[in-house]
Image (cartoon, rainbow, N blue to C red; front, top):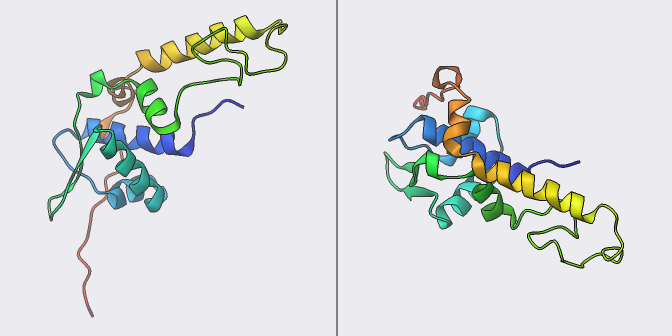
Amino acid sequence: MLQITKRVDYALIALTHLALHSGERFSARELAETYHLSRPLMANVLKALSKEDLVRSVRGTKGGYELTLDPASLPVGRVVELLEGPLQIATCVGDDPQDHTCAASSVCPVKHSVFRIHVRIRDVLYASTIADLAQGSTRASLPVVVSTPEVNA
């Protein structure tokens, strides 16, 4: 089965949320609670995105994470590769169609066809941006976390 990893899924959710709420900051806790996701994994993903300068972490009472790039200039493919490494749908298929990492590579009847599929998937991921993901959503339909102060009884 071909699917995106949980790390990439969390990253796309966080980046889309930040794109939809431009100018606002959100903590890992707020994002995790909003979408019912693992807080430790969300924090880990946001740290990785911060390390790659896709988001900025701001400390303090009005701190949190915010986008550092225009969502229209941030391809989904870049997010996938930053978090998971180069796209590769089969062990013999990467960006070089002559890669011979499989014993059957030299005689494989589908290698070049699979390579063409790899290129098409890569092209779709790089043609799709965080802005496209945000456009496919509506801000009104997104859940919003309302923090309530804890009361000591």
